[in-house]
Length: 66
Image 1 (cartoon, rainbow, N blue to C red):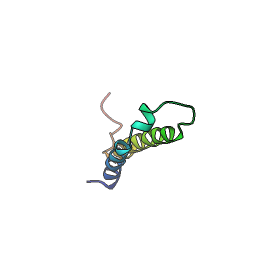
Image 2 (cartoon, rainbow, N blue to C red; image 1 turned 90 degrees about the horizontal axis):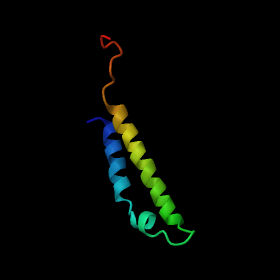
Image 3 (cartoon, rainbow, N blue to C red; image 1 turned 90 degrees about the vertical axis):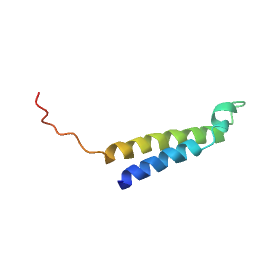
Image 4 (cartoon, rainbow, N blue to C red; image 1 turned 45 degrees about the vertical axis):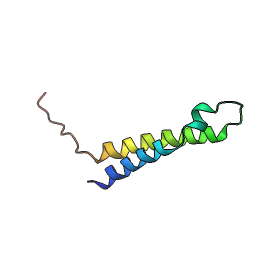
């Protein structure tokens, strides 16, 4: 397996290991900075993982006959 692909899968696992309770369920009050930070970390890790896995695949050729 490719190193980028492994790092991307690791980012996905880490993103879904972040506890969702502070970010989704505990919305009482304005000062929920823990929830905001965990939600932002989850979003960044999901998209970073997607970018790493997608960039590790083979590139499509431009001349496809059309």
